[in-house]
Length: 489
Image (cartoon, rainbow, N blue to C red; front, side, top):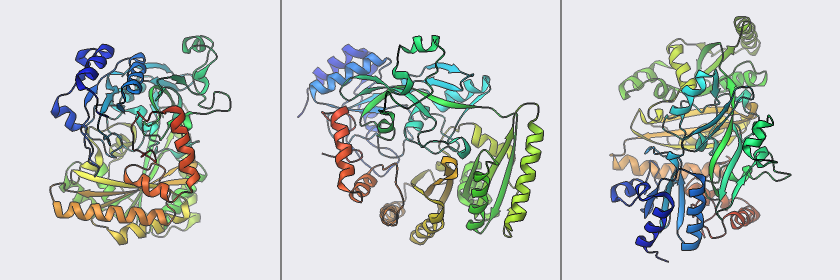
């Protein structure tokens, strides 16, 4: 049903003020597409709330007037996966970038409470001043929302600190699609947040309340169940010393086996594997520089970093390096080569800082990333499947997660968006290989766009039935981000 735009604008202006709402066609058009292949509808309005109570009122209004809400956590125009692009008419974008407070920072308990508009560019320097650091994904974009990254379950580069698939997300405050406010984990009570802090609590445990852990369904829901207004995230202390190691090989099996042992015995902090093109894209800035470095590198490159803190930091690095050298000798890694082609400071910047724009855009300007989870045994098979389908301008990223018990596998298709022939070929190949991977057992735990329909069609029907029941509980009128996941009716 069509809604009166005049009446809607008046009602929204009453909630947030007329200066925090726009229907400027140029601004609206920016929200109808992103870097993905998905083309959506143009929203009716964009609104910038600054308080939780305003979000409550907007969601209650949406239920009354039958319009849709799509939450967006930052003003970055470099979004990738189509999850914030309107799929239906009568959509209003809630842009949460004005909610950008670092509410609290607790060094003793290593936890920070932030609003959704806080970006990596905002938070990393503030934490550094306190001797703390985030558990970061690989060289995150500075304008990206830190909270969104945690809600999307982006893989972090330190598997030894990754105890649960939800890490580093802890407690949340969420406004469900019904317009009801709820707090998860120990933040739910007893007492208010202020009372909890006075009692020495730090909103650290995400489980609950009682036997119910709603953060499990909020995380990864792509804004279809509720709008998170703040969250607590776990932190770690900044190391006193970090030492970078770069090993390369044309034999992926050797690097994978070596990395598995490092993760098993917790001999390093950060560790990841990139093919030559992705590593060059990570550490260089122009296409020419990327191509030159990629030609100088062997195909597979593993980076790992050891670190120490305090007075005995040097001693710790010495024994860790000794254990690692013993491991290399015992494993008979004959194809392994140590490399010094990349300055260690450059690599440290990629794991400790944020970048001004997505590093994957440096080579061709645009990219499509195909990613999923895998067990250790199937990684090589999946690489062969992808490369046999399309290997031109292909970046590969392998990231152990959850203590190294599983792996984030990512394939980045770089392309020039102005080359229509290449663009159409990548669209077709991207779809084909995604389906082939699903049929071969790859687990698409973050099913964006058309992946969702393909993925849920391969699950038993009870999976979709259960999720739709959850949707009816928390968002019975389907006002939040309709059409994502299996919520397409």
